[in-house]
Image (cartoon, rainbow, N blue to C red; front, side, top):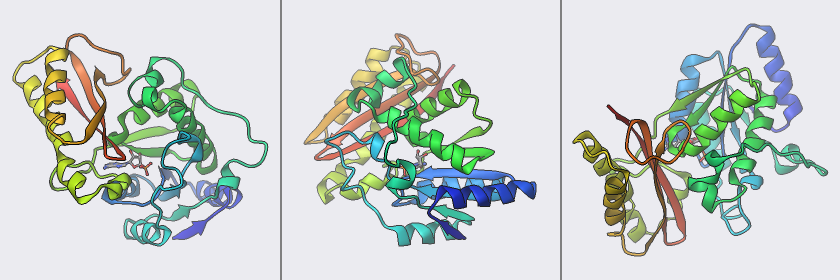
Length: 283
Ligand code: AMP
């Protein structure tokens, strides 16, 4: 596995691979890798000749009072996990490499898709995501790029941006990996105290109960939403940011449940903001 820090070296590597007719799979991450990231790398490994994994804690997607400086980092462990899963390139750019002095151009997916869910509580977040992903797509020039369903709104935004800006690549969405007790794996889980960690599985339990309600025939958004709310309120000290039941593709609000819906929640447990979601096919 090659460790690359600059976009020029990455471009040279990618150009040479392409000249040999190789396909490129790309997995963008913010590091502190866990098995969820590992599953994306593994899927990319199966589907491509070359796998590039990036680690970049992107400052433009963090708000002024968010956890940019505290975000967990462990480059050595990340490199080991990448090697285990068969990555060919570990791309670790620094901030100046991505945002050199004088940088002033941003990519913004507009409309309700970025105004709802996390977009409402994290203004500017998806502008930062779309901008960095655009830049990384230009640098890695992949045939396929891998994203986790865990960040469902990010997936919708990247898919919209890929269509709108004619990126010549395929977005591959991978399922959410969970801890044995159901908690969605996240680099931020390390922030949780022992007591918070013990409560955290209530979030996925609420989602799975909602899914079961729909499978039993419930079609009213308000009823499902209220059930989730009651469940989440059983966690002492939890502050619900949102409970949203929306169209899975457009993220538009729904009054009744039909086609494929996304049930997404964000909850603050102490100082840690956790998100989770499930997609439910409503027949
Ligand atoms: P992050 O490092 O948190 O920005 O995540 C990098 C990529 O890994 C994103 O596409 C995430 O959606 C994905 N990812 C994060 N957690 C999980 C998980 N538990 N299961 C599957 N993919 C995940």
